[in-house]
Image (cartoon, rainbow, N blue to C red):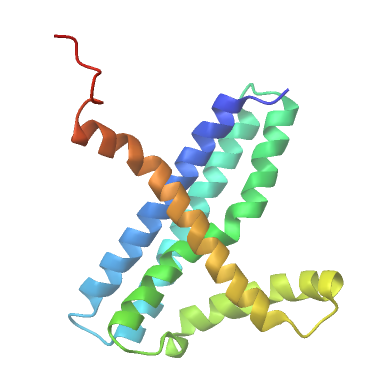
Length: 177
């Protein structure tokens, strides 16, 4: 048996970690740009924030494993963590990419970005070579960026939507006169 409530709670925490990672990395890079070059700021901020969101994901998985949930729920949490770890780590990197885009700078000069891209390539290359037969890594990298951004946006929207509904007020016709 799977506990849908537990999985939903963990996915909500994942979405919160994605949003926080994006915002903290973006703010950290922008603030650091006041005193240093943007690439140096990205190299300083990205490893720390990526470590933080990775740690948050790990803590959530360990808490699930130590909980009284069923084996199926624990297995589902573990599988979701494995599937979502790269999109989660992409959150702070995407903040750096967005800042570099708007600053008209090339993010490829950041050692942290290059290291992340190389690390992801080391994970994705054997998988794509096995599944697709080689020479499509650039397409897979582009697809990863798109999918990771969509996953992050959807998780952020899922967390922000209830807040927006409360701010916008009650549903029309929901009030009793």
